[in-house]
Image (cartoon, rainbow, N blue to C red):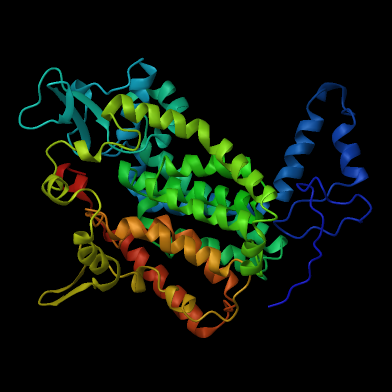
Length: 490
C-alpha cells in the first residue's frame, strides 16, 4: 500500500522546516508554533497584579488545547474505572506489595519487615543454609529475609506517594489513575502514528480504539482492582505506549531504551518487546530483505541506534541486576523461585518456572476456556483459570484477515509472537483471573495491528465484535472475584 512521504511539520519535530506555513490544528492535535503564539508566551503580563502569571496561564491553555482529546479521555476513563472500582477505590487492596517495598526503601532497608506484612501471599522468603540462599520451608525463622517477588519499577513509581502516606497509601486508586493515563497515552500513540503516515485513522477512530483498550479488553478488570498482579500489568500497558512511540523508526533510541527498561522492570515478559526496536533499527522497511542484505556495508547507523538504545536501558537494568544479586544471588531472579508456601512450588521444583509441560494448560486458558452456563438454577460463570481470547478480545479475528499490510505489520506481529511465548510456557496460567490476563502484555500491539489493518470501524461486523468485547469485559469488571477477596471480607 503506497503512501505519500510528505508530512506536516509538528512543533515536537525539531527538524521541521520553518518555511512551511502551519496547517490549521484539528481537535486533539498539537497547535503549530506561530509568531503570535510565540509572542503570547514571551510577552509580559499586561495586568500589574498578574506579574509572572499570564505566561504560565497561556502556556497551560496552549497545552490543554493541543492535548484536549487526551485530557478528556483521561477524565472519562478515570471516572468510569473509579466507578467500577467501587468500594475498592476508597481503600488499599489486599495485595499492596509495592507499597511495602517502597516503604522499606524509605526506611533504609532492602528487604521488607515480616512483622508488618498484611499476608503471606506471593512473598519471597530467603533462608541461608550452609552459605547458600534457598527458599524458606516450614515455619518462618528469625533470620529469614523477606522480599517482594516481582520486578520493582511500580514501587519506584509509588515512592513519592508512599513517602507522604506510608503503609496506608491507596494502591487501588493509584492503579485507576495509571489506567486512565494509559488510555490517554494509547490515544497519543495512535495520533502520533497517524501523523507519521503509519496509519490512516482519523481522530474519531483513534478515540474509539482507545476506548476499546479501556473497556473492551482485559485491561478493564485489571485497572479497577489494585493488587500487585493487576497493577503491574496496567502500568506495563502505559509504559509500552511510551516505549513504542519512541521506538518507531528508531527515532529516539535513548528514550526508547529508558521506557523499555521501565516496562521490563514492571512486567518481565516485555523484555521480548525489545525486538520491535531492533527491527526498526536494522530493517524498518518496506523492503526489509534488501535492508538486511545491505547491513554488512551500511551497519554504522543501525549500530549507533542500538548502542544508544542500550545506553538508555542500562542504568535501570544495572540497578535491577545488582538488587537481584543482593536478594537472590542471580541478576535475572526476581523472586518467584523463592515464593513462600505457594501452591506453584511443586511445579517449579519439578519443571522450573518455564517448561513445555505448561504449554497445554496455558493454551487452554488462552483460547479454549468458555463461560460456564447452568440452567438449574440459571447462572453464567467463568473459569478462574482463564477465558478464551476470542471472547475477551474478539477483534483478533480481523487481525487474521487484514485488508492492508503496511510497513509496521510484520514488526508488530513478530513482537506479539515473542511476547506471548513466556506466558504460554509459564508455570502459572494467571489464576485467579477473568480471561488470560498475561495477554495484556501484548494487547497494545494487537490493537495497533487492527489500527493499521484497514478494517473500517463502521463495518457492521466490526461494530458487532466491538460490542461483544465491551459486553464480555463489562461482565468481567462486575463479576470477577480474585483470590484476595476469598481470604478477606470485602
